[in-house]
Image 1 (tube, rainbow, N blue to C red):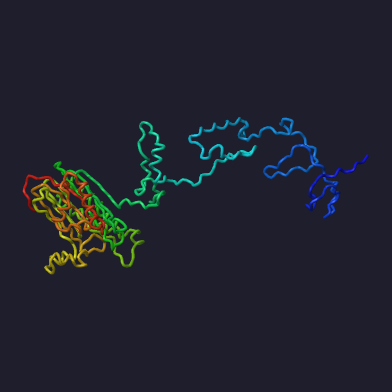
Image 2: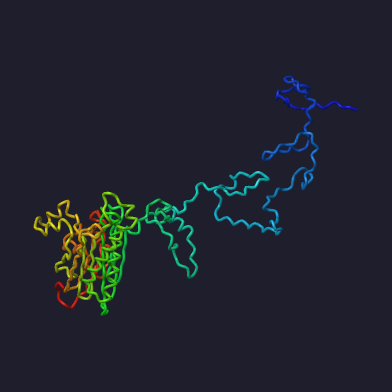
Length: 467
């Protein structure tokens, strides 16, 4: 027995979406037969999740497996919550328990949106902004107060690793291999921009100054003993010639060669004045050798000369002071008793000094000329005939020997001005005194590299005079 198809109670045509009236058997717009539309099922509707397409109506839906028999599925589990095995068949370890919360949530529970059933968000929330590789210096104090670092184990060194450099500007960022702070981007000072060294009673400080882009000065200080066991102090200060190629390498090579020569010759019994002369020759050979290196050829320009520098040095032994120089760097004698006069112990190899020596100008006129600091003697492959200058003195009282480049004596030219700049306790604290003198030049303008070495001279029993 056939049955008439039951008319579907629909409000729109399934074919053209034309509105229908109650009792219509065909669509008035497209003529679609409404009797073939299946009746609406009476069970609970099934919603499509994550883009799944619902099955057509009229299907005999079976009871879902693992359900409660009433069309409600069992709770959904994520794969990570179920036991499993690895590729070898061994059971997988259960996931670690979640850590207890350390801070209240940013959103109150009442305002939080409920998550959809059967959906699990395993991916943590993304931060609003990614942290820098180095901490923000503005937050360092707050972090130190809120979360202090745990104490290191017993026996371990305190503080950050020695190999990791910290920015000198923000004091928080790590310095990368290119010499820039990863936190604030500040360029870090190079190793030679500021150097300090203390060796026994002698100390030296060198600084780039405020106007130059690099430090072309160098120094060498050290202590040794004479064959009779008496101590000897050595200081060498070199100033690179800026108009030459590789002036910084020239001053470094000269200072190292001269210092090594002195410290090797004095213990063998060589007279300090002869040892100073030989040290200047060794420094000259070291600078001359730079002219033949490939690095000089690569940097050589038509208007540049071979690597060159000036040199000045001093040796202090028991009762004897020896100085040596080539160029316009100087040695000053500053007595501990400031009521006695100080003295300058060297004569410049410069245009101004030649004018004064020839009687063509007085000292004030010569050093006021723009050619005053043009040097007439230096160490280098293109130098004139080398004439090392040496002199020996026997001071009759205690004092301090100041060995410096023109970056300092430009701001304390006369012996009296230099004595006023030297601290009264410089003999007891030579490193502090050298720092004070460098600061004096920087306060004066710092137009050049500044290097100074201080050698205390003890009070000898014999009288003064030239040796």
